[in-house]
Length: 152
Image (cartoon, rainbow, N blue to C red; front, side, top):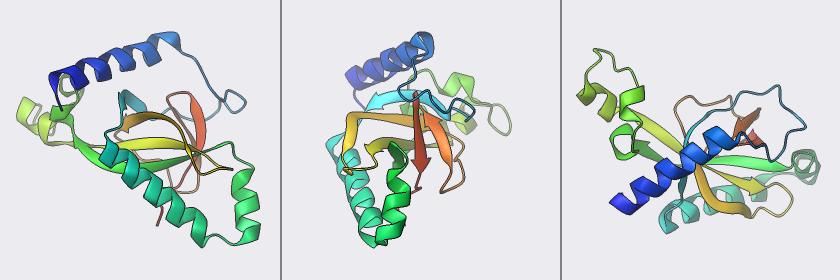
């Protein structure tokens, strides 16, 4: 990541943290998995879009109707080392507590898509550590979305 991207990621994370806005607040009983926010690189956005397209293409019409009851889908795009997310390494406890351990941990970059259209809701993505169970609702940066993993 470039220094500019680091700054934008950190600034975005702070905005999400302090604004505490919820795009889909109807279901607030779910855990927010977001630890940071960032703009997707074109490759990350393309991977996420391909995964959503393949996922939706495999669904039966009945399953598509069921999925469309949710406003949003969350799909894993790429893995990002903690060391590439500004300000995150200091908040992560490694096995032996050292910076090297923390910097080697991997996070997931998750993007949010409209469940009815299969299109991204924005060019932003969310950095997460823990993964919700596939097929469950979870919150990512204020969006309550059905987590579809990597779409497989």
